[in-house]
Length: 337
Image (cartoon, rainbow, N blue to C red):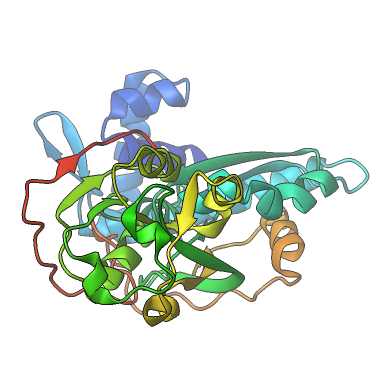
């Protein structure tokens, strides 16, 4: 039986993330020769290389991709052991990396984090906000411990636990012709401008399903943030499907109007969910967070039969069928999440 020192696993994990031994060594405060020696010794112990070396860069080979989650899990368990062994009076400490899709991260932070942060002030919480696809991928790649997203995600290494219901509204500027109508039908949406989220967003996927039941947009403006879309609609640049929690104040003060579309009502409700990695170790901080948010600590589901690399695009549970293109060239704007 081979003994693999934690330092070798740390070099392997950091090198996989950085694609470079030089960067991995810097992050671990090692010299590059020391990091190179640690990785070489690990590959010797395992009897096979973990990376393909291409033009000075490290790329995980199939064996490396299969072993990386196990190495990450071992390091997480070791860190949890050290925290538990050095904790005073049973006070929970350490770090919890939480991912949140835009609606949750920007409008439901208190609901998501409030009880946990107040109960465990010694735990450092790091919140990463992005669209659903990016957050799910980060969780699958061990960059996060848990996530909360707006849309269901299909990935063999992730499981979802229901958290909250989330209502959406189809909104227009107060001066828009559709805003004055009491009841709308699909034909009323001919030659209408739309403002939509970027690809990979759960709200974008739901918008595309909604647009399948309507005439194609006259013009489509794409923005990467819910707040930016809200302001664009207020400015008269189009209509949009947005979470009710994001537009509540604008509806109350009259800057926006909610369009009455009973034939689209089934699409205006969705479920927010916590995402967890199957089979991964769940330490004390994560267990406490789950009890604070959903009142229970779910038993980890078994890992999938085979360890496979994370796909570049994580499919949503209800894929959209091909969309008809807008009649005019769309405007695309990308902003940082």
